[in-house]
Image (cartoon, rainbow over all chains, first blue to last red; front, side, top):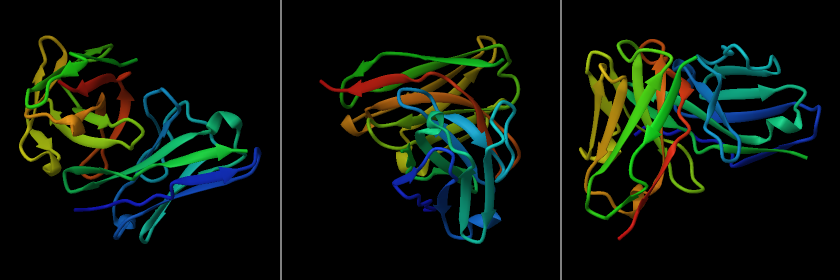
Length: 106
Length: 120
């Protein structure tokens, strides 16, 4: 079965850039999406189709996908961005999530 | 704005069938895909399956035929049934709307989730 791998945790200082990676076999040939989940809340879509940002999501969120790695980048990270982030892709018609990355804003 | 609300028993006994309903407001279930996902306590998200408004369904192979997702467009509701539950099925269950094309689907609106515990 297809697997997506994320680092368990990433730390960043306020105002700096955070990068969260998601690795999978030939992931660059697929479309990846990213979800933010704050404690006790439902996930929120922040990036879809690798780089597209839904309305209402701040411009500091961006995405890329190439080779075996998709990356979520948060520029000028704010304390409100502290959350768990999940990547997601499709293996044909089976949905696959990465294990999630906890972003800590120190 | 589309809103989704999950409902159902919070406690299910082992070996029984878990049954949940997702009610959609602010939009129609007569289009798009509709998905169920779950999240065990302290763990990550797992896709359970989805249904197209035409009734076509796709399920996570890891759930080994225990899952049934159905759609009642007259009530704007999506249902989830998971049979032969064990403690491993204890989780927060979410429904979500899914949009996009083949291989590019994504989940744009999510419900608040409903906690289900499997215990005798």
